[in-house]
Image (cartoon, rainbow over all chains, first blue to last red; front, side, top):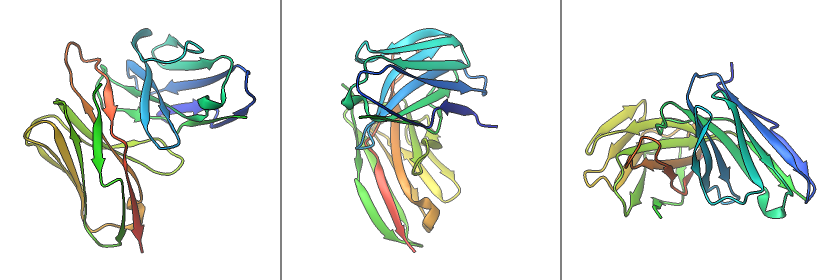
Length: 112
Length: 114
């Protein structure tokens, strides 16, 4: 069973479109994250939720809106996609906000 | 803001060689971690360190939490082809709450020549 699963794996879309990425974890963790990995492989945190409550919200355009319906799910909705949004987006989870993360396998977003 | 530096940025080694890489910061961290990312996959936790001076092994991997709490080292002994990937260090400072950000280094890309 996959511990942290993201869908879709690949997403190619045109500028201006709205898209969502879904993430689910079956580890029983209470904290979930979205990270963005750029073309140089830098990993930068975007958001973190603990038990459905937003606890980290980095300087991210407000076109990005996370939603956590329950502690096992964290989705990311992106409005009005731009070329610069092209990257790999990783979902991760941990217990108690600790740094022992379990990452998903990533969603490669390409905006054309 | 907090930043981590990793060196070397990339390395090409012969199978069987030992590998050393390190991670430094201008800030103190309470937790240091090492992750490995295979192509097309998410990073996977290799080793977590919680105490200054701590030395921890995981198979052929050994990592150390620097005494100054501003650095960490990862060694891989007798490298094999499946060691190929990007190795990320990460630090967490645990200031006010346990929900402090984890900062990732820029990674060390390892290539192993059979």
